[in-house]
Length: 222
Image 1 (cartoon, rainbow, N blue to C red):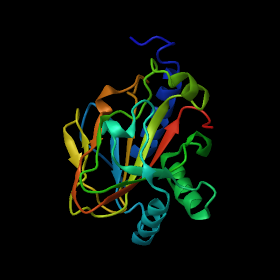
Image 2 (cartoon, one colour):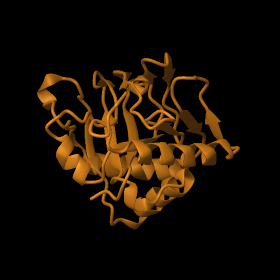
Image 3 (spheres, helix red, strand yellow):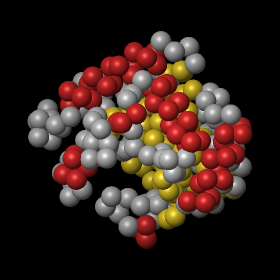
Image 4 (cartoon, one colour):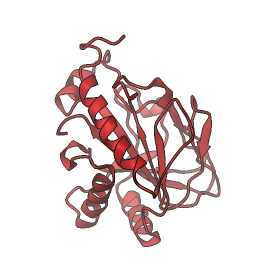
């Protein structure tokens, strides 16, 4: 069992998980993916085609080689291009608020929306979104808002081939569909980090893949 030191945000993760779960289960637009080992929901047509197109343009303007906390781009673990969208842009703010309201999570807990672009051959190998507390970066992230609770990710375009989001432990692959919002709880209902949320952005074979992602912390993010 995880100690308070290895999982200092357990109580907050349990509370946030319960609140968002209740909200999504009561929403007729939220479809829960059938699995007993993770909490994953999909919402169709969350973004309009015009909104998706505008976000794609913004990603092209900001994308740089994607970074990881402890793995260089040259290692090939995450080979997409990405960048934080301007949090002061009114359009970006409107999208961010809509996600906050849908999830029922305070805006201050949300990180900036990140845009990501995958071209043929690019991928993000299997990973978890939550922070491993034994890593050198954890003390800094603990001060910046604590553990990541929920992830919200929206698909922005059709991909000719490849680019699925593959939950490796659940055993499902979700193909990109413009406007769909995919959300999942990075913790278990008990508030421990859920190893079974391991997922990968599989390589794009043909075309390009564009998504936005917003991660939520247990406390105010800074």
